[in-house]
Length: 118
Image (tube, rainbow, N blue to C red; front, top):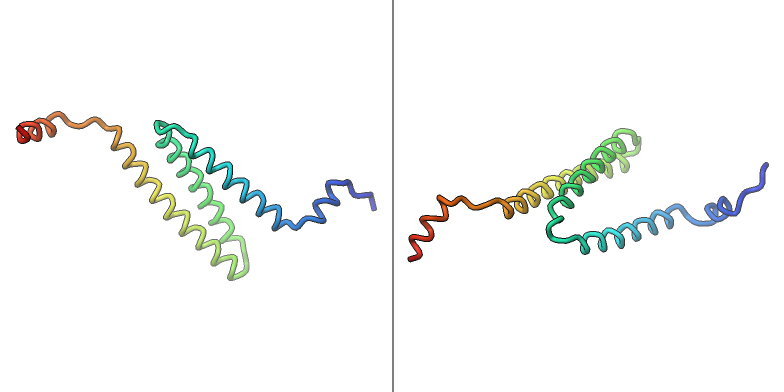
């Protein structure tokens, strides 16, 4: 049996759950700083990218739910699909509202309002 390298020995000593938790916390930290440093003009494209990432998550959740054999795995997969679907739907609603803020107002609709104010 070949000798284990230092990296392999370290990985055997650290729990995979702990490694996943560290990655999760780092992702939250980086995501928080990325979102809060984005200029307001780029919020709409950021929302579109977030919707695309949620679409990837929903495909992964469907695959995970289909390939698992345990009832808990199937339940968690279906729950992940449902939550990702809600996230995508809400993301599209918010993105649409943000895009409507950039739309120019109709001059015909604005003219009677100005006349009524006088």
